[in-house]
Image (cartoon, rainbow, N blue to C red; front, side, top):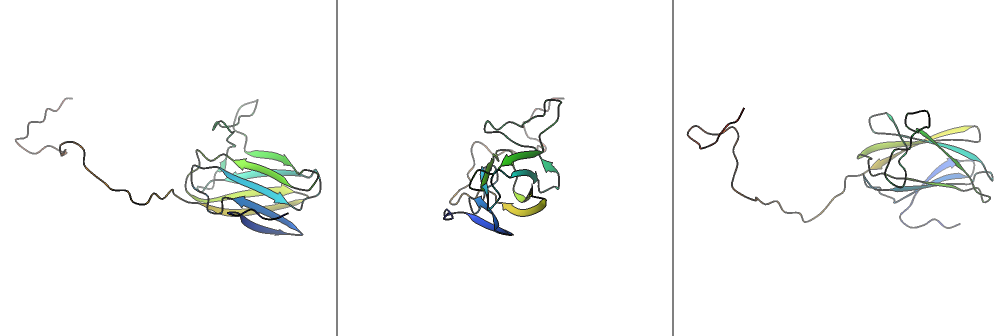
Length: 149
């Protein structure tokens, strides 16, 4: 199966690869993951770790934290490979900050952990400008500023 453009490939060994798209993920945007080369119907547990080292909760397609019935966030997502040996999921990243993230996969008696970088959104060509009168704080002596308190 061909590798789509704008995809990063991580070789996990033993014929298993992790694909991540887009190649340069942006903080606050979705990231799609695929694991290829698994046995058919193989269970894959997936856990994300934030740049702070804290395990991240799962965000659903409505940008809400997925919660356990008994309370608390879902930390580990469970996926299954299809008949072709591919498991796929999306990290809905609306709440994900820039920095080095980690995705940990637990499958077939193996535990693999891959680091990836979420970049800040770069917007070229921005100009700064002032709107309204200049504002100074603290006010100068003799200024006509009313302090309430």
